[in-house]
Amino acid sequence: MPVSVGLIAQIIERVAPKAWAEEWDNVGLLVGDFAAPVERILVALDATPEVLQEAREKDVQLIVAHHPILFRALKNLRSDNQSARLPIQMIQSGIAYYAAHTNLDQSPLSSSWSLGKALELEKMEHLKLTHAEKLVKLVTFVPKDHAEAVRQALVNVGVGEGITDGPHASEYAECFFTVVGTGMFRPLNNAHPTIGEVGELTRVEEIRLESILPENRIDRVVKALQKAHPYEEPAYDLIPLYNRGASRGYGVIGYLKVPESLGSFARKLSAGLRKLAPASLAEEPKVRASGNTEQILRKIAIVNGSGGSFISQALFKGADLLITGDVDHHEVLDALEAGLPIMDMGHFWGEIPMVKTLAEHLKAEKALAGVEVIISQKMKSPWRELNS
Image 1 (tube, helix red, strand yellow):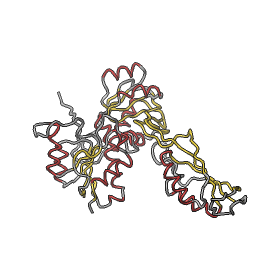
Image 2 (cartoon, rainbow, N blue to C red; image 1 turned 90 degrees about the vertical axis):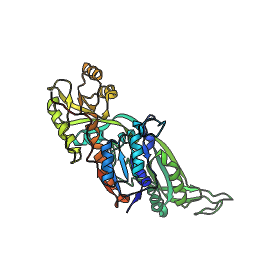
Image 3 (cartoon, rainbow, N blue to C red; image 1 turned 45 degrees about the horizontal axis):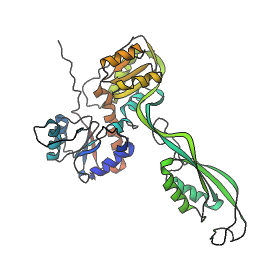
Image 4 (cartoon, one colour; image 1 turned 180 degrees about the horizontal axis):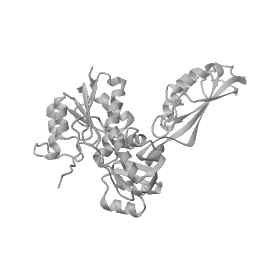
């Protein structure tokens, strides 16, 4: 059963909101109609003529890719304009194009996280943190007989969930603390008390109910509390916390379970990349490294895509190695001078794992149960090794 392009966009943006993208980036639906029906999705890294032809042959209605097809505003839609050629052909073929780029790089589906897990890094965290959710503690007081109803209403709007994604995602939900005590109040003349009489001091056995929620949910949580609470004026406190909630950022850094040499780890990296690549990808990853092959590694930093600008961050966090792609010659020299070896896995291989994780995420979505999700078999690195 087909679904709309718009629904698929919403599903992707739940895990990688467009607002996370860099200002210079161009993400979201770049070609097509949000209302158009979709029966088959092709997931790819780039928009290339080969990928578009594959989409046509497989009767695909939507291409979901990592790299945007349009970065700059088009001044014309002529077929001799290289930047306009593929978008024009997509429109002619009735194929929509959706891009998730720097927003996806900061999500739990990023290649950095996937590769870090495949390499079994421990104590992983973001290499560069871009946002950390602020948390608030909610404390309210409820008559004992109504406490469970109020608690359930709070659960329904996300109170007590813990961190739902990122490096410290929680495996617990409905986390609350309760204490029994006595509440006191005297209703005045215009009050309409649920318990007690106007003018009389009333004592009620109450439950102190407390839990933690993200700051951005305060408004809907308070509304849910006021609706479910039996009192005309429920008492509650919102206490700002220094605890950090869900976070997002670029890259990861973590520790090897067992320290090993640069030389042996290069082989482990190639095997990890191959494991995360779609089975249909025929070519093998090519990893090159700078530094002493005998150097012992303990702490590893990973940045998918072009990560030369993260060298200083990796040094600051004490990394023994930075794994990335597309590193400038002079950046490598500077890193070596500072004592940081680099492993270059190439831009293509550094981001291929994200194609697989995004496709698996879409396949697991119940709302897309009737939609076929296909990983492109025409993806390939633009680089070729020529024999001399």
